[in-house]
Image 1 (cartoon, rainbow, N blue to C red):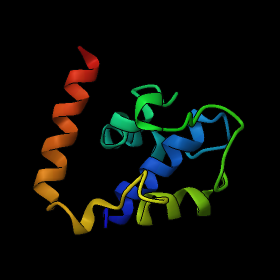
Image 2 (tube, rainbow, N blue to C red; image 1 turned 135 degrees about the vertical axis):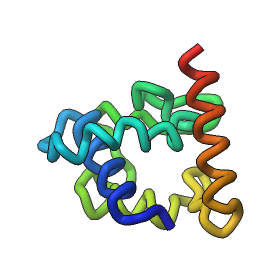
Image 3 (cartoon, helix red, strand yellow; image 1 turned 135 degrees about the horizontal axis):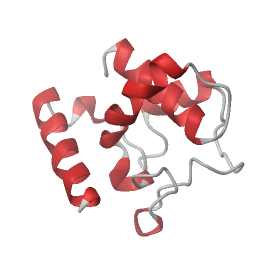
Image 4 (tube, rainbow, N blue to C red; image 1 turned 45 degrees about the vertical axis):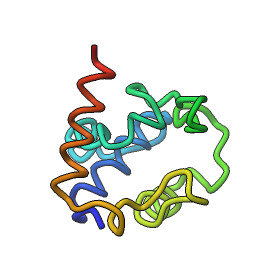
Length: 107
């Protein structure tokens, strides 16, 4: 699983993306950690439809948009579409892929 501080930062950043009350001190580093999510959710969190990645900036949430629901989605994944990578890839590989994808998305 992601270390608790990284997970909290991503949760706060997602709350910020969806225009909810978020902890700004935690959301700022969450933007960098969110690079792990851009392949499916896009660099701005608006989703990537070819992969089925939902828009995190709108009011449509299947599993809930509160801290607990977002934390659960990050930790355990959802229906294989937002997988929990911990059992598939080691931490170094996850980080390497995230950086690669982030750089590709940034152009």
